[in-house]
Length: 312
Image 1 (cartoon, rainbow, N blue to C red):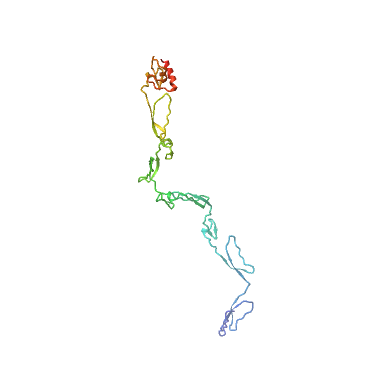
Image 2 (cartoon, rainbow, N blue to C red):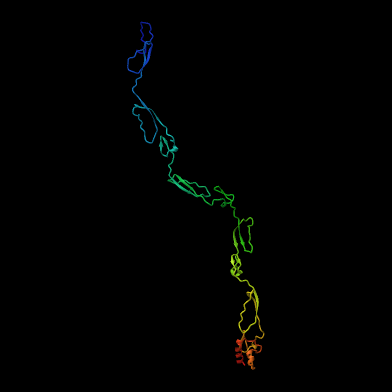
């Protein structure tokens, strides 16, 4: 028996040393000369196996991996890992390689926001899940000069002084007036400028303008006129440099009374009642000298004479 020694009970002991060998081909094998026999015989037979190693990267579709032509089969198959396969990278409700997603799908909308004096939180309403565009309105009036001094609105600090006003009543005068609010007032909220109904053109001298009103009144340069009534109308015109009469004196006559005027005759509103039987010469009649009567003009001599004659 291979690998073991044979013992003869009737003879002395024999040393047995077997040889272990490996064979790769068919044949008859014997132990070498120094060995008593064969021990373990390992048969290494090549059956023609040629395996292929492959590397696989996962994809959406299933992959069926086989050895390429010329190979008897697959040897080592390496499946690459997939980067970014994390829950936060996968849509909610989807499982990839055993990892369930947690990301909600975007269904966006837009929003326009006008800032106010209080904070506001905006959350998209169903079916929207987010805002794809957010427009925050600006205002050109958001400048320091439009904000109270010391107050900051959206990062803009104001410089405008707070108004503490009063009402100002002003009466125009010959000279300009500079009026400043009296502390604690710092402004006039209303200014009332008095008017004057007499500020019209015909109350202002021609060539003079007052508060934009051009005058048209003629400057008075007058004199006095003395007038003695006569039988005829009289027209008097001031001589330069006078342009008017500031006083007109009409002389009277103490003899202009009814008893000095022929009966029925009216002189300057005085009707005469003189009754006379005296005979007057034609010369006196023509001259009109009858009891101090004023000297008639030539045009009225005939009329006066006729009247006198009728009343004699």
